[in-house]
Every structure is written in C-alpha cells, then in structure tokens.
Amino acid sequence: MKNKENIRILLTDDDADDREFFADALTDIPLNFPVEFCKNGQELLNRLYNKDLTIPDIIFLDLNMPVMSGFESLKQIRDDSKFKDIPIIAIYSTSATEEGIRNTFGMGANAYIVKPTNFNDLKKLLKKVIEMDWEKKLEHLEMESFLITV
Image (cartoon, rainbow, N blue to C red; front, side, top):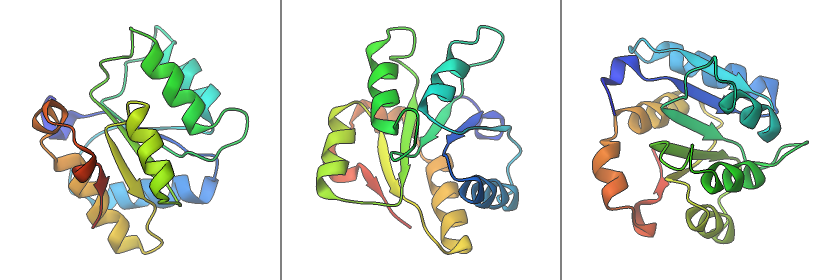
C-alpha cells in the first residue's frame, strides 16, 4: 500500500450515526486522507463501478444492511476480477459470531473488526487498522489474526 497519509478509505454502513461516529474518529487521528461513505452494498458496488472515481485503498463494510448486505457485496467484489486485488476489505460489524467471522474470512475479507461503542476505542482500532502493514498481512492471511481488536 502507498504512503499511509494518502490512503483512500470507504465506509459502507446504513446507519447515519455510525457513519458520523466513524468520520469523527478518523478526524481525530492525525493522518490526512479522504473518507467516503456508502449506505448499502448496492451503493458500494455502484461506486466501485463508477469509472470516474478512484478505487479505495481500504473498505470498511458493515454486514447487516438493507438493499444489499455486506456479505452479498463482499461476494460480488471478490467474484469480479477487476476488484479481486483490492488490498483491504475490513469487515465492520456490531456482531462477532464465530460463524460470521469464519464466513467473511472464507469469502475473501482481509480483516474483521467489531464496532466499538466507545469513541476512544474506535479511534485506537481505526488507527491500528490504518497503520497495519497490509502488504505483509495479505501475504500471510491467517484466521488466527483475522479478528482485529483494540
């Protein structure tokens, strides 16, 4: 991945409060990068297929959304060779069931995080995800390190 100060982040989440919470947390992290938002999986796919827009470096994807779920959009992204090599898809969800974690790992996600309800924990978690050595992590993706916590 390129310079950490120039990465493009995309959050797909149907909850406006969660999108605002996420944006506020990123603003508090001392890095300068653009953040975009989508409200559901279909909007995410429409955005990815828009030839006028740059493909993001990190996609945070909520699993439980109307119109098209995170699972459905993750599958379509990974099934399309154009997007197969997007370096990072971090699953951003309120649930951390073992089945959900296994399913998203098997579908090609690169990390799984649980939405913290505490603002400081969210900042720490986002900073940890952004500062991770993703090239190294993607070379050795393992289920044991798939769940990222504060």
